[in-house]
Every structure is written in C-alpha cells, then in structure tokens.
Length: 277
Image 1 (cartoon, one colour):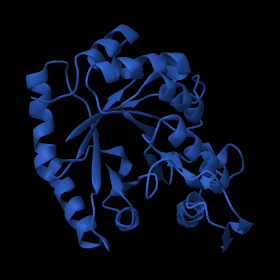
Image 2 (cartoon, rainbow, N blue to C red):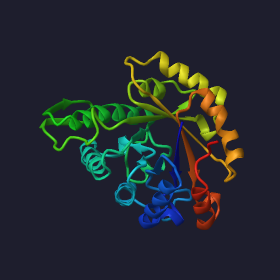
Image 3 (cartoon, rainbow, N blue to C red):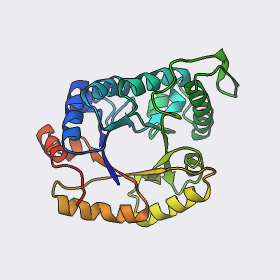
C-alpha cells in the first residue's frame, strides 16, 4: 500500500509556492505521493485557483522521491498535443515521477462557462480519442490520426517520456457506471468514486476491482487509488485504511484542503505521516 495526499488547489492552496512547500514536507514525513486538483473553478466558483501544471512544476523541483500528478485531468477540455508536451516535460523535470490521472471531469461548469461541449457522451468520446493521440505522441514516432474530434497529420514529438514504457495512466470513474471502469481496465490504474459524489464503501471497491480485473487484457501491475480522510493518530488512521487494503486498494489518497482546517492544521496532518501501522 502506498499513501499520497490529494491536495486542493483552491483558496489557501491557490499559491503554487505553498503547494511546493507542503509537498517537500510530505516527502520528509514519508508520504509516497502528492497530487493536486485539475479544475477551472472551485466550489464556490469565485474562489482563487492555481493552475495544476504550474503547481506541479514547482512541486517537481522541490521534491526528489514522491510521485506527483493531477487528479484528475478532464482531457476533453484540453488539446491532447498540448498535454503531451506538458506531461513529458514534467516527467523529465521530476526524473520519472509523474502519474497521469484522467477522467471526464467532475463538474459541467468547467466546460459550459466557455461554450465547450459538456455532454458526458461527447466528453467520453474525446477522452478516448485524446488518450490515443496522447499516448501515440509519447512514443516519439511519427503519428497520423483521423478521429471524430481530433486529427493529427504526420507529427513527431520528442523527447519521449523519462519513464518506460510510458507515463502511467490512471482513469477515474463513478460506480456503478460501468463504462469508465471498462476504460480504466485498458490502462494502469483506476480512481474510483461513486455517482452523485456519495461515499464509496469497501464492499463496493471489491466489486470494482473484480469488474476491472475481469476486463484486463494484459498482465502487469494495476493500481487502485481510493480517496478518504484519516485523523493524525496513526493507530486510528491505520484502522480506517485497513478495510480498503483488504478490498484491493493499492493507494490511499488523503484529501486535504480548507475544509480540513487552517493551514497550520493541514500542515500538522501532513507532518504526522501516512495512515500506516
């Protein structure tokens, strides 16, 4: 089991310098990952927000060991070739520590406010095409692609990612919707949630893990990264996480932001370390 922080980029945490400092403290405290939001608007939408890619660049240069990434990037509102450049640059900057989390996006506002298509079906089509374009560009070979939403004509991107064979891809989905989990089975990990942002239960995670494993077409490690909250007390925290480990989770993502208290309180939670015995 690995333990990461899933960090807000809103309000108090809209300053990339604060995020980079917290990431450095997380690394010292024994956490395995430091992940940030990729959203245009917070809730409420007039709160300050940081750009995740600028923040991740600052985090990359302040840390040496922990995995980093945005959880999650709604690829349908991004140009996949731009994301290819950003992800490869971050992978090199971090010496191969980037994980690419991807999904449809958790709120329509990030699309609708700018006249972008918010229909989940269209976003799903663009996500699948975008992943195809992105991962082909990562190969460093010439790419030609003709899709419904994206076209690429004889393009070659260098350098290739620092990691081989490529940057790991984790796919988000809300259970019991099945399509996101069929998509996740094709990649390297899953970020499970529940429809209507209800709390997922360990029993439901068992169902998700079984569903995804049954649809895996290749062998190799597959990550299951759950999200939750634990107190600073290591024994109590470990007790909360244990049922998720037994259900098949390989990563615990500790949610942190202003709802967990002021900056001093959040920093204390980070310094108390991961929820492990």
